[in-house]
Amino acid sequence: MATTVIETKGLISLDRFSLETLHQFHYQMTFIRRFEEKVNEMYTRAKIGGYCHLNVGEEGSIVGSISALTPDDYIYTSYREHGHAIARGIPPGVVMAELFGKEGGAAHGRGGSMHMFDPGRHFMGGWAIVGAHLPIAAGAAFAINYRGDAGVSVCYLGEGATNIGAFHETLNVAKLWKLPALFIVINNLYEMGTPVEKASSVPEQYKKAAAYDIPSERVDGMDVLAVHDATQRAMDHIRREREPVFLEFMAYRFRGHSVIDPGRYRTEEEVKEWMLRDPILMLRERMVAAKLLDDAAISAVEQRVETEVQAAVDFAEASPFPDVSTLFDYVYA
Image 1 (cartoon, one colour):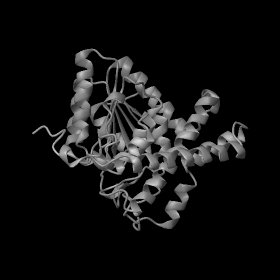
Image 2: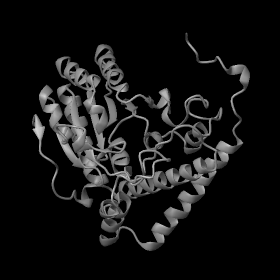
Image 3: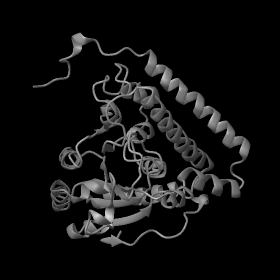
Image 4: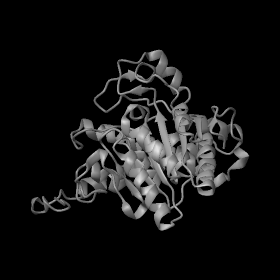
């Protein structure tokens, strides 16, 4: 992998993946999409409170990258992390219960939307403060080296986090200390409501890694196969060379910054243009054309997903709220 790799071009062949893997990608993306749509519905019904940020449109980046990780790898994400948690294997009912603030949630109802956590699965949290998790992810990579473990510390961030001091400090030390870390920027083109080119003097985020001599690549984040391929190559490089890698996934979010953001700063034409590149539909179309998927199979997946998402809601509804007597549990100072 060169110091800086130009944007990936061309389609990854379906033949490089088993039929089972392709169907799993399709199912997982479909599930995350429907889960997030249900989350939006539950928010409007006041079942979910506080801040809530959806992954709608970014499913290809999530499923493609997490599918390339091993159980030994650690995951740190920003606050738009429901889909990452599900793709990592946290039961959907547990994720939904956390959104509901219930005891059965991933953080026992204490964290909510922005703080999913499952140390058993090495899912080390969504972090609400922009960029706060970058130094922590680097610390995890340092610990991996120190203990001689096999894992990689994988840090997801948005393009807005690349303009803060902690970003540059973290990349600098990651390269200096040759840390086994993968930094993934999911660039959805808007830092809340501000276009990335109006907030960053270098809007192509992957170029920023060149300042620290970190191998980097820009990838079509709407193409789950391209994302998986790039992530797998990055992970292989990190494990082999014991140095960090930086990936930028171009992945448009179809909803506003949060569930209460109407997204009026974007034109209808822009949204429609990007929705033509819906990551779920893109994979479906290729699989249908290759006779690996048909309408009946698509319908079956959608029905299965509908049932499973409703089961997640039912689990969250049935889970109790934390007892008031536990108010100070998990408080360390």
